[in-house]
Structures are given as C-alpha cells and as structure tokens.
Length: 321
Image (tube, rainbow, N blue to C red):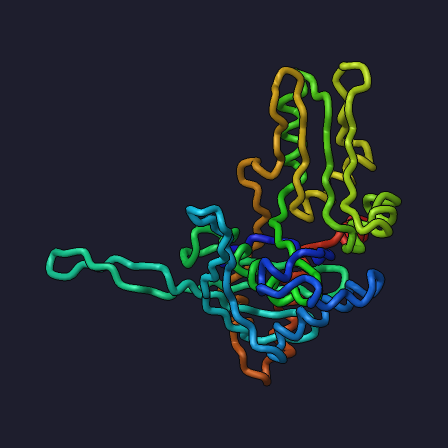
C-alpha cells in the first residue's frame, strides 16, 4: 500500500513578494485582476504549470542573513516532472538529487549520490485544491516536499501578487483531545485563525465572518474567552464550534488554546500524529503512473476516485445523509 499525506493549498493576495522571490521591484509587479476573479485567475495560471504550457522549475528559496546583517536568498533546485494532467487532476514526481546512499566496498563505507523521488497527486478542480504527497524515504517527511512545492509555486505566482500556502490537514480530534486533557485545569480562551477566505467549503462553514474578511482582504479570526475568569465550556456537540474546528483542521490552520495556570498557549498543529493519511493499493498506484495517452481516461477515473476520498464539508455532509 502507498501512503499519502493530505494537504490543502490556498491562494491569497499579497503586496511585497517581488523582491523576495524574483528580485523585481514591487512597483513593476502585475496587479491581480480583481478580488472576485482571483479564484479562476490563479487556478488557471497554476494549471498552465501542470499541463506543460509553461516550463516549471522546482526550487526552494530560503532567506539567510550574512554576518553584516544583509539578507540573501538561496535557491536550491530539485527535480520535478509532470507525469500527466487532465481536467484539473495532475500527477507529479519530485526528486531529491541531494540524497546520499551508503555502500560498502572492500570493507569501507562509501557515499554515493542518489536521486530518489516521491509522487504528488494534485486536485486543482474548483472548490477543492488538495494535494496528496507520497510518504517514502526520498525525503525526510511529506512536509519537506510541501515546502519545496510551496516555494516553487510562490515564485511563479509572485508577478501576479498572489502567494500560495500549502498546509497539511489534521484530524479534528486533535483539538478535542487537547480539550479533554486540559478541561480539569480550566480552559480560559480558544482562538481560531482561519485561512484567507477563498475556499467555498470553508465559507459555508464559518459563515458571515468569511464574507466580511473577503471584503477587507483580511484573514478572519474568532476568539472565545472567559469574561469573568471562569473556564469556558467547549462542547463537541455544539454545531458552530465543531464547524470552526473542522475548517481549521481541513485547512491546516492552527487553533490556540489558553489553559489556566499555563503561561504559553497550546498549538493544535503541534499535536502528535497530526497528518491525515490516505492509502492506495499498489495495483492502483502502478496503474495511474502509466503516462500512456491512450490510458488517460482510465487513469483519470482511478485518480479521481482516490482524491474524492478527500471530502469537502458539503460532500461529507451529503455522504452522511
């Protein structure tokens, strides 16, 4: 069985990205067409990278400070190949040319360069925007691959003053486990920091604050705190509270919990075993890896069936009814 960690990617408007990623003055950057057209616009240019219309360089940009305090940006290149793309679904291979393997020769250890790779499944259909990153030994963790892709696509989107965030999903129970663990001490505050409001399924869950945030180009945040010092009541049966937890879990956004007597807040994204994994049979995996154009329809259906397991809130509700 092949294991894939599930990630959500999100687009948001930013101002000062040209100098960071491309060395281009911000006044020379192309403004985004309009806030209302953002979703279709960014998905379209993102699709151009996936279907081969534009050459795509896979690299991670890291900011470093020199001894004199000046900032430099180093780009580390990785291999990337789009195996196939169709109707918003894509299969990528990301290789690690910096990995070393150890061999034994005449009772001596020698290190040789290797170039293992992992596969990335992308669901770029409207209203979904999910990635499934293969867990294997090519990279230290799926997060490493997510960081490489995030940096790569940010560089491509920078001229349009758009940035991409790729964050791993986690199970909502990670929040409720923390609540149950610290309930005896008393929880005095809970803070939900939602992502930039561009997902239809997140908007339907968090309601009017998403529309208000969109009009202000802001990031919505909701804080519940005790008005008199007594512990607040957090009930898993509370429908709206559960929706807030679900949105943060699906978008990979943090929830902060303040416990009485503990100075620092607890970060839910730091919870153990935070990944959501989906399994794919080896037979299905080998099948979708086939890039034969004659098999595109069959490959697409197999990949769509797998990615459809990653349900948006509306789809999950319909499945329960």
